[in-house]
Length: 150
Ligand SMILES: [Zn+2]
Image 1: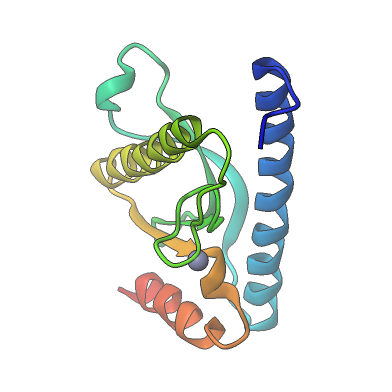
Image 2 (image 1 turned 120 degrees about the vertical axis):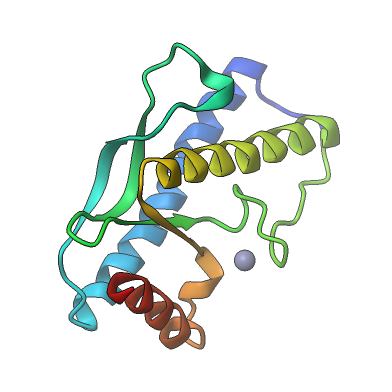
């Protein structure tokens, strides 16, 4: 399938899709927290991590999906598509090189952010979008609660 967009337009379109998809998943997480009486979190908090290896000179302020400040726990909700979930991260058929590169960079960025936050003393949990499905909810929430009580 040939791409109908220019490169610039494509990245704008993808950024829009990405932020929409992530918002829906984050919202689901927030609803689950409320439904299960898990409190003390804030959404989309900018945190300063330890230095970020490959991004020298850049201010290392990272946006974290959910922050439990008192417990020093960060929770990220990662979309299966964008963050290349091993079970659901299917690669689009067109423009393979572009996508392969794109996913590799996303995965690497996720790792960097986790590493920088851990260095700064945070416990970092990454939750796949698919771990919020009905059948996985209990297990996912107990994982988070365990980290909060650790
Ligand atoms: Zn998945």
